[in-house]
Length: 150
Image (tube, rainbow, N blue to C red; front, side, top):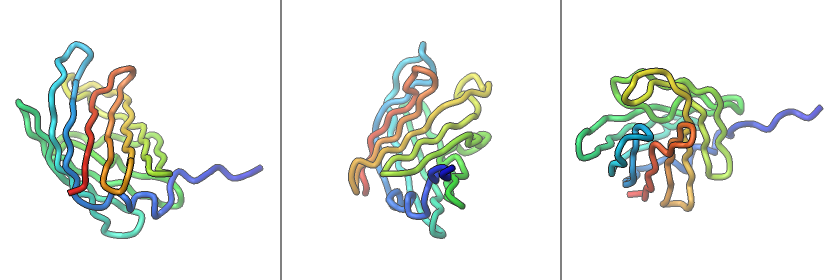
């Protein structure tokens, strides 16, 4: 029987490294208004196969520090990549990082209700200086931001 494909390689996270500036929309619930959001993220690599995230995201009503990490070890991903400062870190259920796309299935607190929900974080690199970050919960696109490298 063939071995399953690896979810990541040590080099699959390297294209994220650098400073990114993004703008887009965030919507906490289906009934909530769509809000504009701007983020500045810095991804650094303290060692091959690891990305550490730090930054800030702001809407018209709130500013949040964000941080996190993602590590590829033995072909498997570990970490949530992105979490709000002061909030419990989401738990990675499954992750895949290949061909310029990172997909993370996570479980963590709902941003307004606090109950535990599952969601998907996708990071799509569409070129060396462009990426899109999207969070979906069920059918709701809760976060959709386009980034350019600074």
